Length: 174
Ligand SMILES: [Zn+2]
Ligand SMILES: [Zn+2]
Image (cartoon, rainbow, N blue to C red; front, side):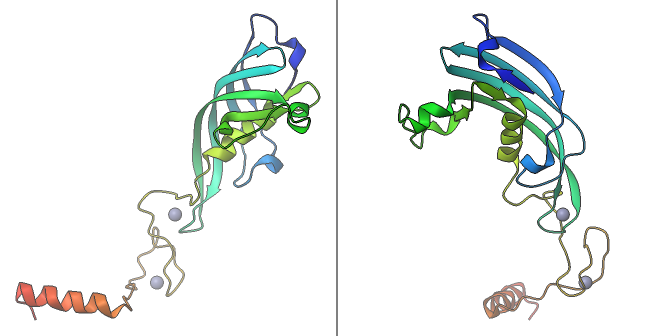
């Protein structure tokens, strides 16, 4: 959804809508269903304050077991939106602390792009289908969440076997 900045009147603009994020805008994952965007816009000249929340679900691939799983998005945001021209003209200098500054182009706010940005920011570096995902067996390649193939991950580090030996001595089992 595109919003001409001039349409944001003195009272601001509040929207609550479902939108289908274009797959191409996501850095990772897959969209299957629309996400919900709630947003409040306030304008001061060309500067816009956008506060809101994105809620929905996307599909991600687990970094351990490579299975696809549903990932909940529930991300609140508070952004300062400025015209892109102000950046290129040098009016605005961005510093690291200005992480919450975003830009709009040609006097138009692109809510789909804003929503996609929020989703992308929510995606973890290493997505996991569940915190205790057992991953894939390095011996046979089975998904250990589903199959108990019986292979034991072998410790090749001699320090561990020594430690094990010491523990066994201590416990009187060696
Ligand atoms: Zn997994
Ligand atoms: Zn195995």
